[in-house]
Amino acid sequence: MFFEDRLIYFPSRHPEGPWRSQAALGARDVAFRADDGVDLHGWWTPAPNAVGTVLLFHGNAGNLADRAFIVRELVRAKLSCLIVDYRGYGKSADVAPSEEGLYRDGRAAWTRLTGELGVPPGQVAIMGESLGGAVATQLATEVDCAALVLVCAFESIPAMARQLVPVPLGWALRHRMANVEKIGRVRAPVFVVHAEHDEVVPFAHGQALFAAAHEPKRFKAVATGGHNEVWGEGGDALFAEIAAFVAESVKR
Image 1 (cartoon, rainbow, N blue to C red):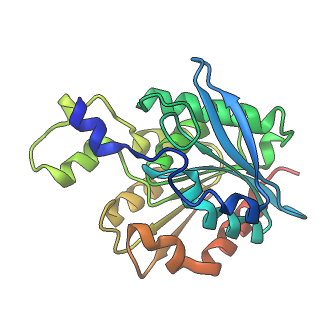
Image 2: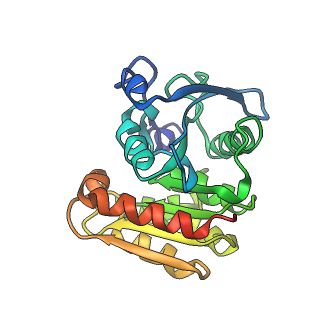
């Protein structure tokens, strides 16, 4: 159990990371609480003349400050953005993360965004990168969102374990994060983005998620770079495609 957690979560706590980027973004702090009492933190950055809003769940390492450049480019593409830190990350409570804990955090972020922040559910695209894809997929099965966007997400934790250890370990794992089993329950449009040369989450995982999703759906293969380079290699064109997909999907 100890080593499983160490292989999945790599959080960093405030002040580690480029927190000064918050001022340049014009992001404001948002505090909220999960239903088990865990205090959480996020950045809310509204975009002028926004075509939609993204609820962004980041990957397993670092914290939200490390994704400031993603928020900046989303806002430039006219997408407002709420990015949140899971329990144990950034300024959120120093509580050990877990699969169910992250799902609770995702639900709390949705409630904050569509409640006090006043964004209609039908204008929110839920986006997850890597580990965040599990939080995004789970949440998208539970709420009536505009769209689901997955970036370099995996099929499941057991499928990822098979990449590391060539023996069946599924029976021994507490974490499932079975995205490929859940995505068929998502009724919103789905956009899957994956790096062709992803060295962390194989390209085949993105293809499997896309195959399991219902129409309408779209797939974007980023031809150069690996797992951590997908945003930079995708560049302005990738953010423009995401913005166009969200704009097409929002309910006016």
